[in-house]
Image (cartoon, rainbow, N blue to C red):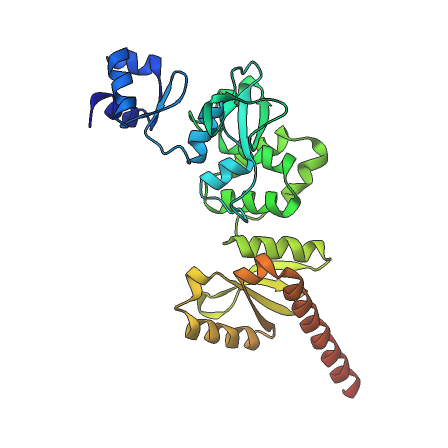
Length: 298
């Protein structure tokens, strides 16, 4: 490992020329490091050891930092799907913006190269890292730009993972337009997964009352209880492929708790939600009908 590569890595994988010069790098050393492939020139005056396909690299090449859903996705947050525009935060005086794929090609009004630019105030520019805005600023952008279920899932993840504390969340809410602040009534730090978050939001939008993480015996909990009737479990394959027997035991516990057990694999929540919703609503209807019959017989 040559000195330039070592310094870039020590500086977090991205470094500006002046930082490297301050450490002792010469123009010759920088040119040589680029030519031998130990570092990559992301844009004029910027060097990196990341691969050019990395979203953060592309944001730097554009002339800014990741924000919005791109920042959440890059941080491992709960985002449905991997495609979409590259959300890049740039200063209001940002200039010489470039294609995220080629630093020789300018970004223009007519050709954004898949980039969605966000011209941010100095307060936002002054927070975060070299490649990503601070999480509260990224989430504020998500609330402004994305639909409800997407924004709720991103905030659920941030709160559940303790990446966003209650105080910072309140500061984030105060930074968004008042007409959007009601999203605070839709998020919940107890939510444990993306399919659970999406199912909860979609059920509420459909007019159902939803409680989450409802306790059973032996410390077990139901992901979601819908209208006090259906005990909904949203199974993610990575967590449930080796738990078939335990899951069936939990279904029996749900029955003993007087709920109707209903399992929806994550892939069905993601891709076949109308089928899942129809099944839940049919189960609710059947239970209510059965209860009505029993009451009349009594």
